[in-house]
View 1 (cartoon, one colour):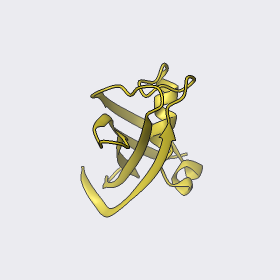
View 2: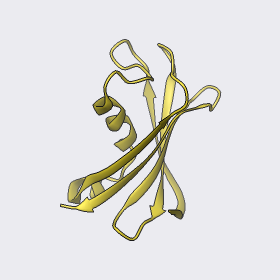
View 3: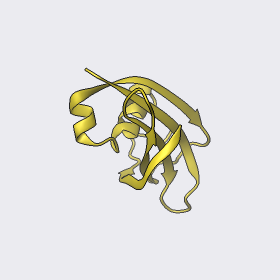
View 4: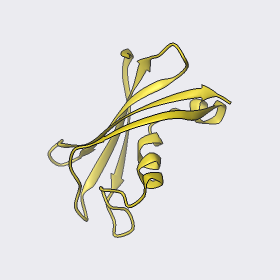
Length: 102
């Protein structure tokens, strides 16, 4: 899948005792990743696939930035996601989501 446009969404998250940068549940990770999906996609589509690669974990107090880039995908909206440490930019997680209408 190739990038469709150069704009990227960005959301900053703070790691607290109840949310670690190595999420305790897959649901928590998914919520961090989809924070950057446009509302109109979330409202009219459902998540069809999620691919995740873990690189590192964050520490308590870290600020984590969630970024997304729209991809050119024939089956519907798709996004490349990165969760990175705000301080030094190191990648914590890479993910790709694909969405289908419904």
